[in-house]
View (cartoon, rainbow, N blue to C red):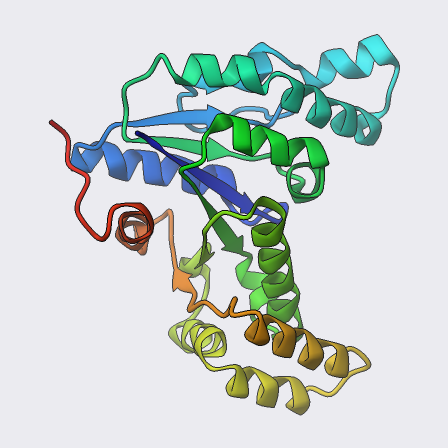
Length: 253
């Protein structure tokens, strides 16, 4: 049975680019992977799409036919996509592969916070893992990092499937910045200290948030990933093996 690997994150965090990079890496390793685009408003995707939701739902057509602006059309389209989940699943079942690499909409809330999306994820398959992308610019500030941690935790709760946090576009960060961010993800005491050093009206809220995340057992060490130099891609693969195959390697026949 194949694994559905979702790429989820805030707008501009690099979901589509990472989908392409991981697909290229999988091809290089000899693993079978099928790309799935769930963004009806996507334009100029950098990878060859095997299963494209735009074959069922087009954002531009929704805007024209229902006389909606971009924001309203995106909401309507997101629900329309979810209604097509059974049809999408039938197409997925026609493939024999190890992985479905699922590129989610650019606006994260259209995927994460729509009730219809929860049903769609269930329909597309129970063996699923969310790759949650932490934007490197936001992550450099302790308050921004806590905000992304909260979004990651919320996403995991919404879908109730395993998630793997990655620091996307890590090639844009210095070694010092990467070390600081990864240390925050592993040691909340360091994150707490960094928050208190940059005291602001949001500091106490952020501190309470990290306590809640820690108490719920959702603390995860973050993995730096770069689509440019392929850093961290093997770690994503390993996380899936650990989650579903007891660490055994999933090899091609």
